[in-house]
Length: 307
Length: 261
Image 1: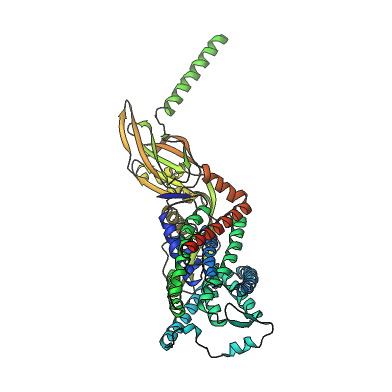
Image 2: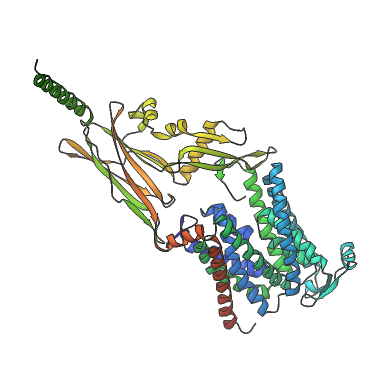
């Protein structure tokens, strides 16, 4: 059954976006990522123009992350205090990132920097998570790996010495309020540079730097993504007119349900298992991007807009 | 000589001249008709089928074109960076090129018309290339290569096509009737398209006629597009509110069903 998408100017079999939404929503509920780094390229492969794909994806993520945040909140997995600090940082970082892009564009090498950042961040984060989780799974004779006490590193000591130390009850950690704001803004800059929500960066930051338990990480990440995507949806609708609301509804039909199912599955998996699965997905996406960059394209022209 | 005689001679001469001129022009019978004047784009739209038919003289060939107005089109150019990575490295602007161009002919256009005749009558990709002005922000790739890539890009998106054959021809008195079908893809955006039939005889275009077909949005598709374009803020807020409501709705349904969590 086909449906015409008014803004994308494309007719599409409705089962495709619903199925895609379901799959990406599942990942969202499982790992606390928005899934933009997967959804946008897949939409482009279905024939949706790149600018419409990216903008519509943010609209869809609003629905999926609402569904996911709600499910995780019911399970007591959302650290609202940490989420708000990260959000303040992420918002500031996003604004800074847009300025960085402007400077890079003026220098004439924006696309190269953006692509390389993307590949290096994805590859780096994926490899680190994969190796770390594998080692933890091998070592862990103890039942719950994520609760195992970790040795204090230099970074941890430095973070503990910062002012404005505050307790994050839900996550069971104490940090300076500056830490989530600063790391949030760093992720925000990178997210703006790469044109993605940044969930796949924020999750490892919360796990490894903020030492939050994996289940709270997922819920808190979704809460933060929800607000980022509300902002992006509005800006894209207002300035670029590229949100295809009809496509977003088809995607969210799948993704809201997928997010709920993902949350239920996530409960049954251990933190290390979740991390290793997310690491594998991130690495597969990295390989795909590297192949796209190195194989000779069949057409040397592409539509303007989008990365 | 009386004035009346001179007048009579002048009228006869004019009449003769007119009849000779008429014979030159209207020797060819040529009509073109589309099976529909407009195509309505609603939620069910998945392209359409357009039948083009008409009358032409026996012994002539036919070239049909379907084209949009010429416009400015901007695309990104990919090239190798650092010898290994393919990425968008510049912009290419194409001026005086149609967004949509279909050419259908009874025989291969290059076999029935010379290159000059194709160019003079604005037929085929070659004629579009001659007219196009192509500006690239980087120096890599000559204009012909860029245009060939442009055609490849358009053909892949079903916006350009050149084909021959596929016409049904039958006798209709002293003339012949032609008919062909275009599978009109949904990728062709809403707009006005001109269909032109060119009669070809002895390597020359001897006559041409045109008609128009419109692709237009209707109903909800039209309202949503208008709102997205003209009321971006309201459209954005609506999109966010519906996404939030859908997310909460599904959350509530699952929350009730899975109360044990």
